[in-house]
Length: 439
Image (cartoon, rainbow, N blue to C red; front, top):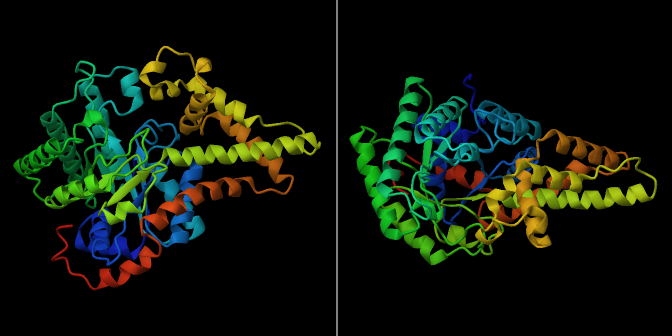
């Protein structure tokens, strides 16, 4: 894979390069010096529409945008978006140029670790094979110009059901993956990248405060022993109250984690921020960043529902020759993918898809659409839907993007990011490297 130019040419990236520190570190440590706190917003790019909407929302907010792509989404094999690392980075670069967005863009691997790529679990890969793939994927990300890698070796397939992986093993594998990535990056003389570690999942072990301390202490000692004193994760994922089925952010707990991470020179990162009840509490608690993903898939689906209603009305009025049947196509594609099974609750494991309640089926279809947006049958149905509406004076793509953007705008406002690019400039130009080593 060929190396590429940076995804943006912002002055923030240039100043980070001059200081020989990763862009993400540079932004987070500069944001901390603002009088008004802010939390970096990260979008999980589960579709082309989400990528476009993210950049448009960032431009409108005049703020940075971070893309956090899992290896299920973007990987050596294309992932479910159909994009490898280089293609993903180039797609973002081209879309940014199309709308003339000139602010900072951070591209990151999200949840990079053995068995966190669904294919490895489905095919029951060995640890050795899984780690080898992850290392190769990290190499590709570095060559493609990624800014950050989330190292998350917190899944262990060899343990009995219900058992948590020992935190010492998480530390060991985290160090192994960081060391491999750093050796590769330096051998290629590529710019420094940022790291994120930990997980919010219960299997990851960092939900417990004592284990959280043991993890960071062990990681610090291990990296030093490897001669990597100059490498330290800028972000540590913390369990802050939100997960797949809960939407309330626990501010007091988050502040405890923020203080613990600050002692090591890191910021806390929140995951599962989708539809969170109190997003404004993230910056108040000192959270460095937060990921949002499935929410945008649901909003994209909701927008297509509205377009389908318009299409059916046009069809009844003989203004459309053939219906796209987009909703039927989406349901069938989600079902045939089998990926909906990943999100079944324990009591649903023995239940067939058709026997689930309408509410559960609707949720599984909405969240499962992320896996099938780029399949041929869905693309064909969507193209027909767009063509039917465009022919009748509508702008269907614009309508979809606007619905996703409305959801994103909420986070830009709540996270204190509006006009951040402008507000950071005086601080950036007036700063020295000294005093910006600790958050």
